[in-house]
Length: 134
Image (cartoon, rainbow, N blue to C red):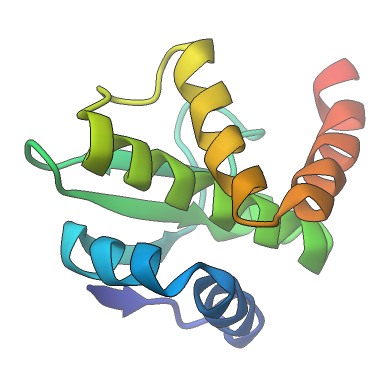
């Protein structure tokens, strides 16, 4: 796995999220995620914070949209990262397609929650609501 995150704050959060994963999960994801990178923003929405994109049957890449993440707390950013790792793990284990359906997002959140990221996901949900509702 190549981690290409130049923003120090985001890199430190990524490192903490990664280290918080169960060791077995880290081992499996380390070989299935090709690249984790930051890009300025998602071209279609200002409320998309990250994206997991399958690159093969059980491999993929994670993009983090730094312009959009910069409006969130560190706790919510960790929630985004754990959520995207959840997508990667669901894809690795079940071959789930690209995360474009609500049930796929639910699966990613369930994985992140099972790994102990409930507080981070809650922070993300709370900070996301005003942006979506306005």
